[in-house]
Length: 476
Image (tube, rainbow, N blue to C red):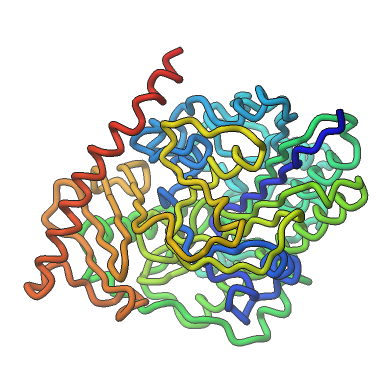
């Protein structure tokens, strides 16, 4: 019998904010390949991560559960089972090339084969030693890996905000290396089963390190400026988060409380240029699918695990619930369906879990908290599948002040609850899209605050009940 189930290529970048694709309304970007996916597929403009931190977000995505149910609340916590196992049991050949940020790094987690590339910079003394495939390629070429140890030798290290041009051969850049490895797999894998290929690109996570030829156009154009810092008005836990970044150069970013306009412009130019490098890799993957002769039966999904503040509100990287930290791009291209659909309803990153399973002809488990997005792929965009989304962040080595952050986004409102604190954040996103006016202590909005804090309690109870079947799965 001829195999008719689609292949699936799932591209996940690291730390890519939502405003980084030209076709989604951001003309400062050069992203022709992603633009093509938008025009040919279904694009989601309000996709929210379930956590503004790598491993919790990814474990949530690969279980279809919120972090408090997946059991992965921080980086370097052991992962449980994933739905990749369901694909494998259904007859898919499952391969990971690049970053998944699992723990252990090279555990199978349902994949038949893994070719792991992790964070660009793992030189912090608190992180475990690990040589990934990219490390080994650099060693084989006899070159020193760029990370905070090498960047610290630069005279501009204290002022560059983690932005450094790539100085080695282009093929050794972590994103290019990962993309070419994925393309080689597509050329050479000789199996006949439908395949699930997860491509985890390490960028645009810092260090912000594009090749000079990709950087040049961004240095010569107007770029969006950061949302002004309002750190003095933020809850104490967020003030401490900023202080942590200033004290410690996480991921080779020496954060500054008051960077100049030129410093932030340069940082953003490097970041956006790294996204353009990634865009080129997406084009390479599509070309490899064409060369293999499977492009007409291969679904491509593109998204990211969380965003990057890039000095919005005075913050470095993620670990906040501001829009540019928790909102990510997302595109599903299915060549068997008509495209050009733009979805502006609220959706959650973990919704991609049941979506992938359904596209592969596998019934999602009843305990999954993700909601399949397949109705949107059929053009059914009239009724929202969700009216609210949630995100969580536990205390870890970087956000180490508050025990737990919980965010709810619904309608025009976004609320951040901070466990053990009388402080929080409440924003009217419709009236205040830059999230500059915190209404948490405003008496005129006390009823809104009460409504959404009460909703958080109900949601946690409902969520705990919904995931009971998951506990049985991981115990078996």
